[in-house]
Image (cartoon, rainbow, N blue to C red; front, side, top):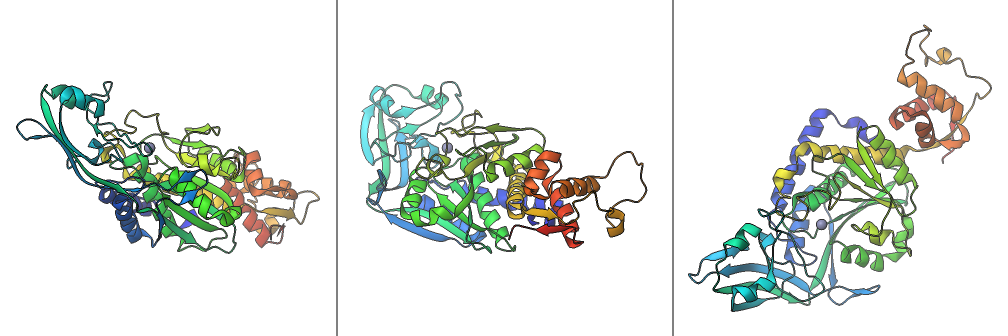
Length: 436
Ligand code: ZN
């Protein structure tokens, strides 16, 4: 199984790599289009070779159009003495993302219409965007805003917004089957760590790992700008959609919270059950029903597609105060949480990869397991070991109606134990694999 080969020292090493990759990506000013996305994909390409797609502005994608490409070099507000009181070079969150170019002078009272702050979190710079309505603006902490004296300011946004491309990355890992598992993460946020550098680096390292493993399913990884990216991919790849049998949107996976999962719109698909089975074994967790708000699951689960795609997160968007502010920085995430999220994904894939249906070849009463070296011969010990319990569950419910995941759910045992027991029983001729 995928998880079998990962030791705890591998996990530590992995956590460091994930965190280092995030640190490299953190300063880049990303948006839904432009150089920031390209530079991000270039760095991820060092982790796993990916195909970069460039879709021209104006391309019609269902009810939407690929927008003009946005790039930014600099932005600032200068006081009367020429000091940069707000400086894009210090934080790319300072510019309203997708701001149109602007240069001029104005009074503070006029400038205020273009300033965004968070009075409840006076130290934090908010993250704001204006993708589909042309505007310009600056985001700053309430403390910075309070320090601005009345008077005239010079304002500059050195950006361009013109026809270009929407850029996204894709990795395809071919398995034995053409059936696919989709893994999608958004790559459009500027210097924000948990949302969603965490998702994209975990996806990249998952792809890298799966490339080295024999896998039953094919895996498709998408590194896309939120909303317009998934809409674009779905519109231009409709013929591939029917191959997607399971999927996960990865977002907000590096914070110290426990794991949470938002079900697919279908609600109880194999992916939903596999995630819940894994999270149950980890202690605290929370499951949310599907709602038509959130990340790209909104598009994958729109009624015309209704794909079996759920969303895996730790603390979900909007439920941590650092969300969409400068406090969602590298200090808010940790290597341990990142690697823990990645191995959780592998455990989920392990279930999907190994869920099979077997038929008990000795269904009339239990087989004498000690004959096959499968059962402890000394009876009466207080606790039946886990493996032996798993053998009994698998034998009893392998009547062709129940899969291994069904049996794991019924028994409360770990899927991995159930799968190991099934493999041992099959090896001794006590089970027949009905899946192929
Ligand atoms: Zn976000």
